Length: 437
Length: 158
Figure 1 (tube, rainbow over the protein chains, first blue to last red):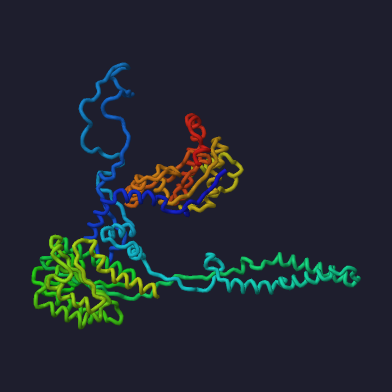
Figure 2: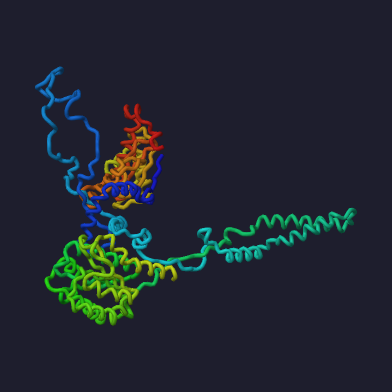
């Protein structure tokens, strides 16, 4: 007797719960690895799964074993020529042998490597950004789709039942199968009652009564046999998911790379860019990234250079804005592209240049941009000294711009969790707009 | 397989008059071939070798399920613990990198005796695995003195 069972179609991820437990347990180490990789990964690769390695000593499992010292033990030592039964052997002296021992399965004490899924990676990435949960969810959503009506189906959820269609089908079927109407049956019954009420019926009336009775019975049977609403009548509204209309977007990343921008500043800036990119990736099919770095003059560079090399020189911010304007004119006609810009700086600017910046933004760029976000990365020690209304050169000149244009956002950032508020308006506005669609 | 064919020939002389057709050729398997091959093996096991066996249940599983089974020490049911997650990740990495192959089968000493066969096995391998696990181990599970004394094959699956 044999039974073949095909288990391949059984639900996968039987181990998912255990995996979650594991990730939770080593969260601190993974978080470190994720932060490290945020520094090295490309902006557009950020929302993919990621291979991380964590030190294996955080994964040691407790286990029972016999103590090395003390206790009584009896051993069988086969094939010896030295001892005979009853001999007493001294216990080994000294502590347990030091140093890590080789593991039996040949795996060294390397780091423990495994691949984080996209969701797990983003969870950890969002960890200290303090995003509201709803935003986290919507950022993780891969494609925005909306259900659209696509006719009717014979299967579906009870909540989607289309009553009109169902009743129309039911009526058609009842007519086609000649199901007696309730009204007719009641009429028959009434006639029967009327005839029965006659105390001394004639033979004609009696025959009529018998006829009516058999007719009444037949229609009752027919009614029972032919359902009022049959499962085959039922129709459900059918929906298919359509991707939301999305077009192209270009994201400009502008950053001051003069010597005052150190590793910490660049790291924060990168998180800021990543967040904007994630947000855009959710809304647009195709996103172009343009990196413009500037000192006293601006250059378009690739991502690697953008984040990892420093330049020496002064700081003239308007060069970057002018470069951005040029690139828009050359490659990204605003009719076809949604233009987003994110600028990160430490707030320094060549003093007479700020008017140029304001002018460029007011006259040219803000009209073309969907959104312009500016962050000023400040030192933790400076934080208590600054308030909204005062600040460095660039901050002061951008303040009036922010007042004039609702799609201009600016914020000082000290820690990673300060980044999200820059986007708060952007997210709020867009999700509102989306709910109106 | 040649050995088995030889044996079938010896036991069922009537068959030898026909030109014996191989049970399968090629590496691919399907459930029909599995059934036929199983029947042939069963004949040898029961009539030729006189094995006494628990009922057989052969389950085809994917590599991922095999890795799942690895991390829970082959137990069909197991409590949840983070260390299983860790073992799974390690086994999976080793397997994906080609550092280790997977077991061709896992067999459980229950009644019915469950043998998990990996879907990646070739047909010849499946035949070997069925003969080995579903009959060999099975016979041992049923007849071993200690197993008889200490295990409850019917109760294991609950």
